[in-house]
View 1 (cartoon, rainbow, N blue to C red):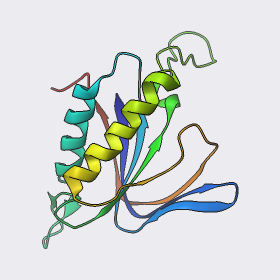
View 2 (tube, helix red, strand yellow):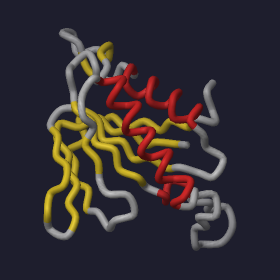
View 3 (tube, one colour):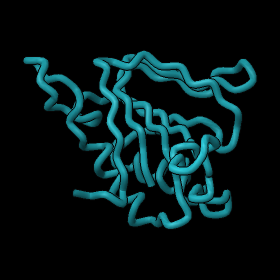
Length: 150
């Protein structure tokens, strides 16, 4: 399971010209799930995301987490994060989890992140064609892979 995490001053998800999720200060989390992922990956990533210190304190040093600033989170499922690009010019998505595996893990991820944060998590719609808009604050963009916990 891997994520691209972006610190945002605002973000939204639009489907069919309708805004389905919108936040101000917080995190936009693009979530890629592969067949080998489990609830162990979900547990570790949710704890990491909720406590990752990427927000500025009074001295503008990144010492605060999204929990510390009472920030918001949008989670968007994105199977393309599992792209294999080593061979040829067309990405292969063979590692991306099929919906019967991905959807339960996606829903578990959202529920566990909500528990960590103590608030509702905004989301896109699994499998939908979404337009994601954001203002990356910093910019701060971090990639985390649950299979690489070094």
